[in-house]
Image (cartoon, rainbow, N blue to C red; front, side):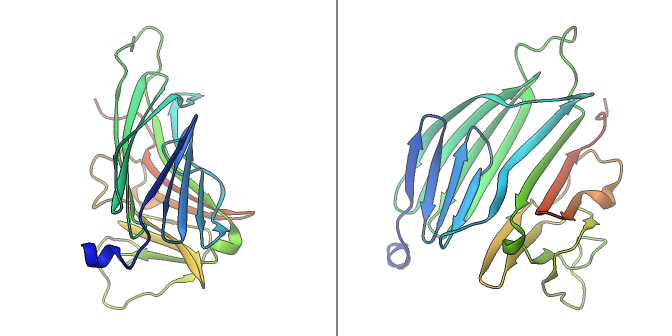
Length: 225
């Protein structure tokens, strides 16, 4: 690893009052009162139109994440790890954010009922989704894997990246959006196990408009008892 790390710049971590930044070779991730990056800069180019977010709803009420707390637990030349916690209505979410020297950013989420939860005055979580908005000039191309549109089984013929268009897809382990000189790859997980979706064919939705809006639905109706 020491011979490999010499080919890359060391991971740098910067903390401030409401968040932190993680910097690697040619790329910076900024988190500010958020579990997810509020801005991603690569080779001096800003990718995000607005901060990425984890959206939660409780019936007709859209929740707001508050009381963010950060703790850097590991920091060296090869990687850095930051713990993030916040609450929203009757749930608490904890995240472990890890960045490695090659720019790979991993986020593990754990969502649970708050110890303050009371059925008499708190709504039940009914919707949960991941949303990221990318600047159009930085998201002209789109690719997903496996490349069979209606399944997670690899198709016989590889489909290369094509123009980003408004479309819906079932769960995909990996999606990528970018342009000729760079982009943003998102590894969504190995499967949709634990997801609660009324229409599994619309797990991932891409809306191409003023910006490229990418939404991954995790829960979109009252979960099973």
